[in-house]
Image (cartoon, rainbow, N blue to C red; front, side):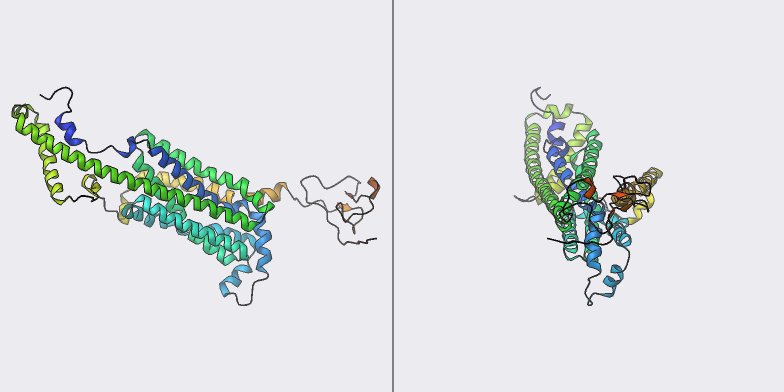
Length: 406
């Protein structure tokens, strides 16, 4: 029998490399995936956070479009703002009803990390086009940017899920998925806070450009994920080759020095030894120094076909229906929530009988001159003499201005 301090023959031959799920660096990968998700959702929801700012910026530019504009651009410019605003989400969403099927196939063939970088680059290009559309006050450029962003947006989520599935297993998988999704939606929350402040303090174009900067950070995180994947693959290949050679030498030593032990081994050990030694012999003949040998130990790739959708069970379709119901209720409201809430709770049209005391004067500011007491201010009151409007009503504006300066 083997000495107690030495590993058994089964352990020596079956141990090739540590799985990714046992490496501490998987938590770094999770952090990087969270950064990618934050960047994706941040820029995705920028139009929702800048509803009124986009209306002030782009509706002004629509009326000044040049005569040389294309017919499609002219048709877009004549549509109401709400129609054009909702198109920003439609041109993103419509392609993504089909693209994830092809994106998933690309991830399976090209690899998760490579696909993640490609989709992240598409998202960055799309957001840059959106920012340029805001700069030039062009709806067609913004819509083209949102379409390009849609080509990578949802596929980024597919690639991130594949990366996490490769680095986590067991109970850690659900935990990693939950953390990435929750952190991604945190990007939407951060956008809802930061984007309006940047637009009001600087400009709408700057707020859109900040989204492009966030996407650039997400792309860098995706590139780092690819680097970690390649580095771990090289280490796995080196460990696998070392273990293969060590196990072969130890097996030969056992065959030469301890023939009695061989006879006492179980049939299962003999079967394992024979199978693994045959694979070693085949792989060793084709092995070259410096060659990536990870494929030797990976399972055969599964052929992915669209016809496989028909084999999905009822649980999958119930989950899909649940996602459609949840997203159908939440996302449309989130897209127009800022406009609805502002129009419902703020800037409400004041009562008809609410008028200024002096209709041709401002209510306050530097234009209001020679103010010595309260009687000289220009308050707004209703027919009963009650001060109006209430705090959430829109202010009363003068119909004309009569300004004289000394």
